[in-house]
Length: 162
Image (cartoon, rainbow, N blue to C red; front, side, top):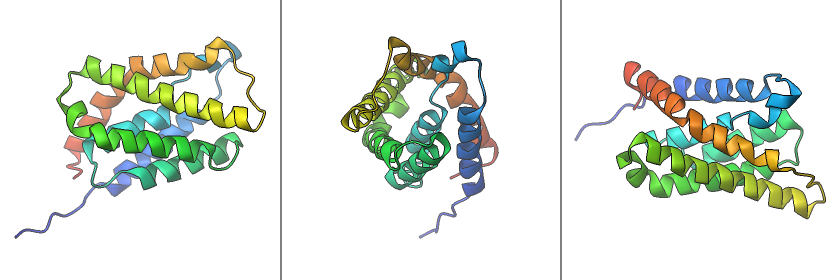
C-alpha cells in the first residue's frame, strides 16, 4: 500500500491569490460589468481537477476572502461559492469527460447560479439594484474558461500537483 504525497498546495493557494488580485484590479467603468468571476473559475477548476483536496471548505474560505475584498455582507459570497463548489464536486467526473466547450457551458451555468444566489441574498437585505449588465460576467467567465483551464492544467501538470 503506497501513501500518496500531496504536493502543490502553494500553487493552489497562489492561483486563488492571483484570482483575488485580478478581481480587485481597477478597470474602467465601461469594462467593470465584463469582469470575469476569476475566483469562481479557479474554484471550479480545482474542484474538477483535485476534488479530494479542494472542496466546499475552500469555496467557503475563497468566498470570505471575496466578501472582505468587496466589503460585501460577510458570508454572502462564501455561501454562494460553497454551493458552486459542491455542485462542481458532484459533477466533477462528468465535467472531466466533456470537451472544453461543453465545460464552458457548464461553467456558464455555475457562474449564473453564483450570480443568482448573490442577487437573491442582496435582495433579501434590500441591496439589489441590478441592471442587465450584471449578468455579463457569467458570459465572459465562460468565454475565458478555456484559457483558465489550459493554464491551470499546464501548471498542475508541470509542477506535478496531486
